[in-house]
Image (cartoon, rainbow, N blue to C red; front, side, top):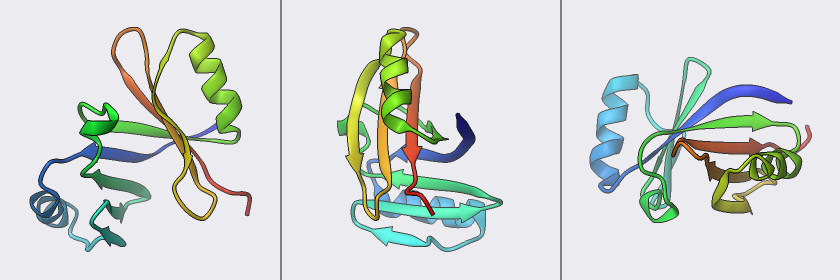
Length: 116
């Protein structure tokens, strides 16, 4: 079961330029501003800038679906022919992420937040 797409990650090569652009576009300052990730919250949407995204196989913006059980969802997608791009990993505070590519070349991200 999903809670929908709540996060979009953009792979970027120049984090400073991308951060300036999104600050202007969204009209807010980032809530996370680290060398490895810059994140914005606007209108209920998370927008992330990942300077390592291209190395992870991200070729453009990736929608991240928030799911209840990332392991089961990931296994189901792989079972339907998706290819793993980013292995399941904990990115901090129990938040799990992974990404896959389908047979058409579309990219899908998955996020499971820790139980409240």
